[in-house]
Image (cartoon, rainbow, N blue to C red; front, side, top):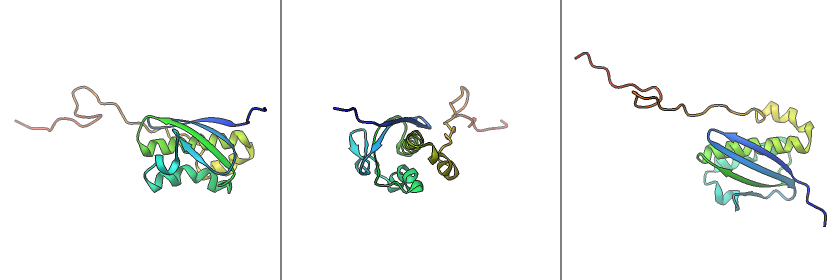
Length: 131
């Protein structure tokens, strides 16, 4: 039996990390063993992970198996989108131009700034009083 050919990529956003295994199929997306509709509660998050397929008009042509951990739903959806984008580029390098034009190839480096000592948060100081 021949091994099934799949394309692997990693996507990260905030504190989330997603591993994406992409293979030609019928458009099923499985996230941590659940369907994407069961795993992602918000409709916006479901739309975010499908954006790379929509740009390329490849909605029903790939199956994706995703394992994601860390962060919240928004960060996980962004990590999955980047992972799917990178896996599609690994599948066909000609897809890179249209995905880059849509803004999906670049990793978003924004992270939560750490809390500093002597402060209430990352930058929030104690209330000022003259007396």
